Each structure stands twice: as structure tokens, then as C-alpha cells.
Length: 252
Image (cartoon, helix red, strand yellow):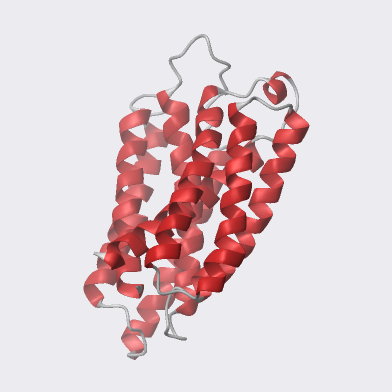
């Protein structure tokens, strides 16, 4: 049971970091949206802090990683993420909100490196753990915001931002898919060479749920744009969660 909470902690941490980075990138424009961000952005910003705090609780209690990683890296990121969420909740001015976001993003990216390196005891798989964590963060950030934007699209009273299928969210999602593809190719090569510790079944499930299904959903989202956006991004998010959990269960 403890290893399940360990995996959940890593997934929550990746989700919080992915949303933070994506929001910081989105929340950099000028004009009306600068002071009146869409509801989807505010919901994502409000979720960042609780996700990071829950990840810290899981990792401090149930992870096999060194205690200093949780206390020196995950805890500061969680606190900064909570402050960032508070800035969204209280509707701070754009400059203060963006500053809090950049602070959380910088600490979160540093946390990504160290947490990934301590996620597995195998030196051969340490780079895989980092790629998996980075891929999770990018996919959760891009797909999660896509889902929220699609979900809130019909709220006429809210500020709307055109859901450009080739915009920032698409680029963040493409980054996650690209990282996952490169990690899969590297792991597949190691597996064929007999040096990888990732089981064949885990590798296939990871490829299917973290790459192929999300890629198909992204293609469907572009083809059916703007119809059926909510179910498309829901399926994509659920698939990524299954794929990343499968991989991290193997690394745990």
C-alpha cells in the first residue's frame, strides 16, 4: 500500500509543476487578459498549491527518497505553490501574481531534477526517471489546461481566450510527447541491448498510454476542433495517468 502512495506523490508533484510552468507561460501576455485572466486559468492556479501540498505529504511519509529531498526541495516548492494559488484565489495584481508564479516555477524545476535522480536506485534508469517526470509535468500541464479551457468555454460571462490548437498549450503538450518519445526510444534500445531494468509489459503500457493514446487524442482534437473537446482531453489525461503510473510503479 505504501508504494501506491509513493507513486501518487510523484504524480501529484508532476501535475503541480506542469500546471505551474504552463500557467507562467500562458500568463505573460498583455492587454485585457492581463488583469482579467480566464476562469480556466484561475481554476488551474488554485489547484497548484493543494496538489503540491498533497504530494509533499505523500513523499515525506511514504517515499524511499532521502528525507533531505522532501524537506529541502519538495517542501519549498509546495509552500511557493500554495502562495501562488493564494495569489490566484485572492486575485492579486498581475505583477505580484506573475512574480509568485516565476518563483514557484524556478524552485519546481530544480526539484524535478533532484527528485528524479533519487526516484530510483538504479544508475541506468536515473535518466529515464528524469525524462518520465519531465514528460509527466509537460503532459499534465498542457492537457490539463486544455481540458479546463474546453470545460469553461461555454461560460459566456467569463473572459474567453481562443483555444488555438497550435498555441502555447499545444506546444507544451508537444514537448511532453516529444520527451516521452525520446525516453521510450532510449529505453527500448537499452531493453534490446539487455541493459534496461524496465519490464517489456511496462514499456508497452507506457508507450500505449503515455504516447500513442494522447497523440491520437491530440490529432482528434485538431480534426474535431472545436467540437468534443472536453471528452477528448479527459481521455487523454486519463491515459497519461495510467501510462505514467505504470512506469513509476516499475521504477519505485
